[in-house]
Length: 236
View 1: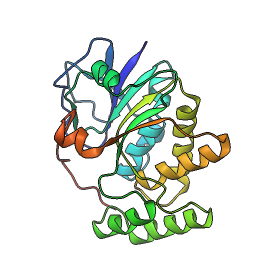
View 2: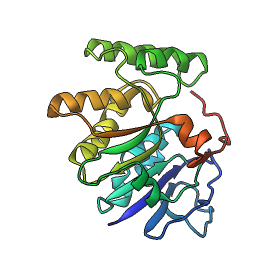
View 3: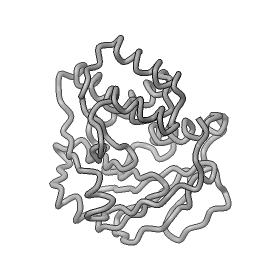
């Protein structure tokens, strides 16, 4: 079984850190625009010309993340995606066993948002803390409402995701997320993720099999992942 830890580092937004715990059989790959970065653990793939032309750093990073198969192909069975400010601090094989990840059943493991469970409530908070412009967020919300997206339909934090890449549902999720993200106004990935899940579940007449983890367990209580501050604050 092929397993990978993937991250994306664009425009020096973070300092890439080596894992505290490294399992045999897991490949570590960083997709980046920095050809000077070095590591004894991470292997590097450089973004192509098309992605390098995307002007906004946040949208550029998200595009590479969502369309990662463009860079790493479709050969990996299990993929842990972490943002580049995160450090693996757990035996990943034992973690999957503990969480009862089943390659034949589980679609993905993800953190629950710590404070909210509704995109419509997330939007005003993003505006308040200047995570995106008011116009982008409000236009985005109006589009979702016009399509009948329900309130309180869940909200995930997308900086840490373990994917079953054999899953048809997961493959479709990332392909559709990439499409919808680029068609919707907001820079915020979380403003599209649960919405895309809802679209696919309706199309497939099937629910995703998701293992949900309280975010504070991941970063604070159990510290499976150590999260560092970003180097920069991206401009909206």
